[in-house]
Length: 59
Image (cartoon, rainbow, N blue to C red; front, top):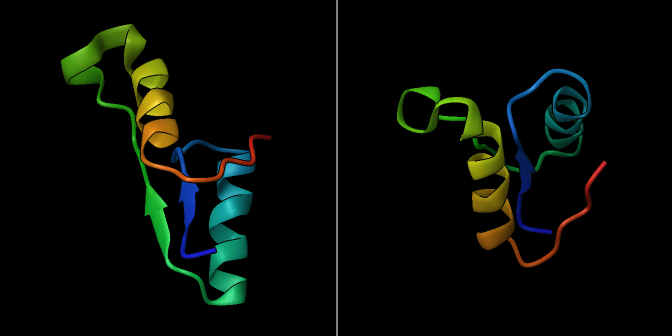
């Protein structure tokens, strides 16, 4: 595992960020771009996470 990826939301993403810090792994946060994508921003962000990951564990 090279890094841990988060969507920047509360809940599971916050836990992932804490876990990365606890185990000393780099953290990459993908935040939704509401200015560019409006209400679709979270879905676009999720697609970007999937496209840029080799392995995904979704909670």
